[in-house]
Image 1 (cartoon, one colour):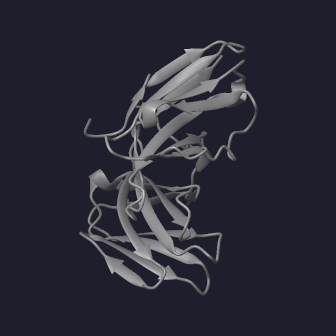
Image 2 (cartoon, helix red, strand yellow):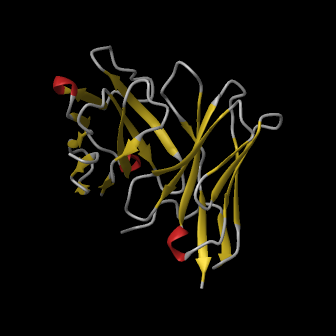
Image 3 (cartoon, one colour):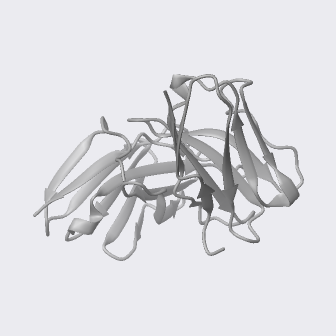
Length: 112
Length: 114
Protein backbone atom coordinates (compact mmCIF):
# COMPACT_ATOMS: atom_id res chain seq x y z
CA UNK A 1 0.00 0.00 0.00
CA UNK A 2 0.99 3.61 -0.27
CA UNK A 3 2.84 5.30 2.52
CA UNK A 4 1.24 8.00 4.57
CA UNK A 5 3.23 11.01 5.52
CA UNK A 6 6.01 11.15 2.94
CA UNK A 7 7.35 14.33 4.52
CA UNK A 8 7.44 13.14 8.12
CA UNK A 9 10.55 13.30 10.29
CA UNK A 10 12.46 10.08 9.75
CA UNK A 11 14.57 8.06 12.15
CA UNK A 12 16.84 5.47 10.58
CA UNK A 13 18.33 2.78 12.82
CA UNK A 14 20.33 -0.35 12.28
CA UNK A 15 18.59 -3.65 12.91
CA UNK A 16 19.30 -4.73 16.46
CA UNK A 17 19.94 -1.23 17.76
CA UNK A 18 17.61 0.58 20.14
CA UNK A 19 15.27 3.28 18.80
CA UNK A 20 14.03 6.36 20.60
CA UNK A 21 11.12 8.30 19.17
CA UNK A 22 10.18 11.59 20.77
CA UNK A 23 6.96 13.57 21.02
CA UNK A 24 6.15 16.95 22.48
CA UNK A 25 2.54 17.08 23.60
CA UNK A 26 0.47 20.20 23.67
CA UNK A 27 -1.93 20.22 26.61
CA UNK A 28 -0.64 20.38 30.18
CA UNK A 29 -4.04 19.05 31.31
CA UNK A 30 -3.62 15.82 29.35
CA UNK A 31 -3.44 12.84 31.67
CA UNK A 32 -3.44 9.84 29.37
CA UNK A 33 -1.09 9.13 26.49
CA UNK A 34 -0.82 6.46 23.85
CA UNK A 35 1.72 5.49 21.24
CA UNK A 36 0.38 4.15 17.96
CA UNK A 37 2.17 2.34 15.14
CA UNK A 38 0.94 2.75 11.59
CA UNK A 39 2.21 0.47 8.87
CA UNK A 40 1.80 1.34 5.24
CA UNK A 41 -1.80 0.96 4.08
CA UNK A 42 -3.13 0.22 7.55
CA UNK A 43 -4.79 2.11 10.34
CA UNK A 44 -2.88 3.07 13.50
CA UNK A 45 -2.39 0.24 15.97
CA UNK A 46 -2.15 0.64 19.76
CA UNK A 47 1.34 -0.08 21.14
CA UNK A 48 1.50 1.15 24.72
CA UNK A 49 -0.13 3.71 26.98
CA UNK A 50 0.78 5.63 30.11
CA UNK A 51 -1.11 7.70 32.65
CA UNK A 52 0.12 10.99 33.99
CA UNK A 53 0.70 9.52 37.47
CA UNK A 54 3.52 7.43 36.01
CA UNK A 55 6.91 8.35 34.57
CA UNK A 56 7.69 5.08 32.87
CA UNK A 57 5.89 2.04 31.61
CA UNK A 58 7.34 -1.04 29.97
CA UNK A 59 5.88 -3.46 27.52
CA UNK A 60 7.36 -6.14 25.36
CA UNK A 61 10.49 -4.53 23.81
CA UNK A 62 8.89 -1.08 24.22
CA UNK A 63 9.14 1.49 26.98
CA UNK A 64 7.30 4.79 27.23
CA UNK A 65 8.72 7.66 29.26
CA UNK A 66 6.72 10.67 30.33
CA UNK A 67 8.17 13.98 31.45
CA UNK A 68 5.30 16.20 32.50
CA UNK A 69 7.56 19.10 33.41
CA UNK A 70 8.51 19.67 29.79
CA UNK A 71 5.49 17.94 28.24
CA UNK A 72 7.58 15.31 26.55
CA UNK A 73 6.86 11.71 25.72
CA UNK A 74 9.25 9.15 24.29
CA UNK A 75 8.97 5.65 22.93
CA UNK A 76 11.95 3.35 23.22
CA UNK A 77 12.10 0.21 21.12
CA UNK A 78 14.72 -2.34 22.11
CA UNK A 79 16.54 -4.47 19.55
CA UNK A 80 14.74 -2.87 16.62
CA UNK A 81 13.54 -5.30 13.98
CA UNK A 82 12.57 -4.83 10.31
CA UNK A 83 8.94 -5.31 11.31
CA UNK A 84 9.18 -2.20 13.45
CA UNK A 85 9.44 -0.04 10.32
CA UNK A 86 6.36 2.17 10.38
CA UNK A 87 5.11 5.63 11.29
CA UNK A 88 4.74 6.18 15.04
CA UNK A 89 2.26 8.65 16.53
CA UNK A 90 1.78 9.85 20.06
CA UNK A 91 -1.71 10.79 21.20
CA UNK A 92 -2.91 12.65 24.29
CA UNK A 93 -6.22 13.10 26.00
CA UNK A 94 -7.60 14.26 29.32
CA UNK A 95 -10.10 12.70 31.73
CA UNK A 96 -13.68 13.24 30.75
CA UNK A 97 -13.02 13.41 27.05
CA UNK A 98 -12.45 10.65 24.56
CA UNK A 99 -11.13 12.92 21.86
CA UNK A 100 -7.43 12.42 21.28
CA UNK A 101 -4.90 14.91 19.97
CA UNK A 102 -2.40 13.21 17.71
CA UNK A 103 1.15 14.25 16.98
CA UNK A 104 2.32 14.50 13.38
CA UNK A 105 4.24 11.24 13.53
CA UNK A 106 7.77 9.95 13.02
CA UNK A 107 8.77 7.47 10.36
CA UNK A 108 11.06 4.71 11.64
CA UNK A 109 13.23 2.99 9.05
CA UNK A 110 15.11 -0.13 10.08
CA UNK A 111 18.26 -0.73 8.09
CA UNK A 112 19.39 -4.31 7.53
CA UNK B 1 -16.76 -8.40 13.13
CA UNK B 2 -13.40 -8.78 14.77
CA UNK B 3 -12.19 -5.32 13.83
CA UNK B 4 -13.30 -1.98 12.44
CA UNK B 5 -14.20 -2.35 8.80
CA UNK B 6 -14.10 0.52 6.33
CA UNK B 7 -15.21 0.64 2.73
CA UNK B 8 -14.20 1.31 0.11
CA UNK B 9 -10.48 1.01 0.77
CA UNK B 10 -9.74 3.33 -2.12
CA UNK B 11 -11.94 5.88 -3.87
CA UNK B 12 -11.09 8.08 -6.81
CA UNK B 13 -13.68 10.72 -7.63
CA UNK B 14 -13.99 13.73 -9.84
CA UNK B 15 -14.00 17.19 -8.35
CA UNK B 16 -17.55 18.28 -7.57
CA UNK B 17 -18.94 14.77 -7.05
CA UNK B 18 -20.35 13.52 -3.75
CA UNK B 19 -18.80 10.54 -1.95
CA UNK B 20 -19.89 8.28 0.88
CA UNK B 21 -17.45 6.48 3.11
CA UNK B 22 -18.63 3.66 5.33
CA UNK B 23 -17.47 2.45 8.74
CA UNK B 24 -18.60 -0.70 10.51
CA UNK B 25 -17.31 -0.54 14.12
CA UNK B 26 -16.53 -3.37 16.50
CA UNK B 27 -19.73 -4.90 17.81
CA UNK B 28 -20.61 -3.45 21.20
CA UNK B 29 -18.44 -0.35 20.86
CA UNK B 30 -20.63 2.61 21.63
CA UNK B 31 -18.19 5.31 20.58
CA UNK B 32 -17.25 5.92 16.96
CA UNK B 33 -14.83 8.49 15.57
CA UNK B 34 -13.83 9.80 12.17
CA UNK B 35 -10.37 11.23 11.58
CA UNK B 36 -8.68 12.54 8.47
CA UNK B 37 -5.03 11.98 7.67
CA UNK B 38 -3.53 14.14 4.97
CA UNK B 39 -0.12 13.45 3.43
CA UNK B 40 2.60 14.43 5.86
CA UNK B 41 0.14 15.33 8.58
CA UNK B 42 -1.10 13.84 11.80
CA UNK B 43 -4.63 12.69 12.39
CA UNK B 44 -7.24 15.44 12.30
CA UNK B 45 -10.40 14.88 14.34
CA UNK B 46 -13.62 15.19 12.35
CA UNK B 47 -16.59 13.87 14.33
CA UNK B 48 -17.43 11.71 17.36
CA UNK B 49 -20.55 9.64 18.08
CA UNK B 50 -21.31 8.32 21.54
CA UNK B 51 -24.37 6.17 22.01
CA UNK B 52 -27.56 8.18 21.58
CA UNK B 53 -25.98 11.50 22.47
CA UNK B 54 -25.70 14.34 19.99
CA UNK B 55 -22.50 13.90 18.01
CA UNK B 56 -19.50 16.17 18.47
CA UNK B 57 -19.15 17.71 15.01
CA UNK B 58 -16.59 20.29 16.00
CA UNK B 59 -13.91 18.93 13.68
CA UNK B 60 -15.85 18.93 10.42
CA UNK B 61 -13.97 21.35 8.15
CA UNK B 62 -16.95 22.68 6.21
CA UNK B 63 -20.66 22.17 5.69
CA UNK B 64 -19.83 19.91 2.77
CA UNK B 65 -18.96 17.26 5.34
CA UNK B 66 -21.60 15.33 7.26
CA UNK B 67 -21.86 12.02 9.04
CA UNK B 68 -24.55 9.72 10.31
CA UNK B 69 -24.58 6.74 12.58
CA UNK B 70 -27.60 4.55 12.14
CA UNK B 71 -28.83 2.28 14.91
CA UNK B 72 -25.77 2.99 16.98
CA UNK B 73 -23.63 0.88 14.68
CA UNK B 74 -22.64 1.62 11.07
CA UNK B 75 -21.56 5.15 10.22
CA UNK B 76 -21.39 6.95 6.91
CA UNK B 77 -19.25 10.02 6.25
CA UNK B 78 -20.50 12.03 3.30
CA UNK B 79 -18.51 14.66 1.46
CA UNK B 80 -20.50 16.78 -0.97
CA UNK B 81 -19.06 18.62 -3.96
CA UNK B 82 -15.60 17.19 -3.33
CA UNK B 83 -12.54 19.40 -3.72
CA UNK B 84 -8.94 18.41 -4.35
CA UNK B 85 -7.99 19.42 -0.80
CA UNK B 86 -10.37 16.70 0.44
CA UNK B 87 -7.90 14.09 -0.81
CA UNK B 88 -6.70 12.20 2.25
CA UNK B 89 -7.02 8.95 4.15
CA UNK B 90 -10.23 8.91 6.19
CA UNK B 91 -9.90 6.76 9.29
CA UNK B 92 -12.69 5.45 11.45
CA UNK B 93 -12.17 4.18 14.99
CA UNK B 94 -14.38 2.77 17.70
CA UNK B 95 -14.02 2.28 21.43
CA UNK B 96 -15.86 1.16 24.52
CA UNK B 97 -17.07 4.06 26.59
CA UNK B 98 -15.17 3.91 29.83
CA UNK B 99 -12.31 2.06 28.21
CA UNK B 100 -8.91 3.62 28.69
CA UNK B 101 -7.25 1.55 26.03
CA UNK B 102 -7.65 3.95 23.18
CA UNK B 103 -9.31 3.39 19.93
CA UNK B 104 -9.32 0.51 17.49
CA UNK B 105 -8.82 1.93 14.03
CA UNK B 106 -9.95 0.65 10.69
CA UNK B 107 -7.56 0.55 7.74
CA UNK B 108 -9.03 3.71 6.29
CA UNK B 109 -10.41 4.88 2.98
CA UNK B 110 -7.94 6.62 0.71
CA UNK B 111 -9.85 9.32 -1.13
CA UNK B 112 -8.35 10.92 -4.21
CA UNK B 113 -10.16 13.83 -5.84
CA UNK B 114 -9.06 14.46 -9.41
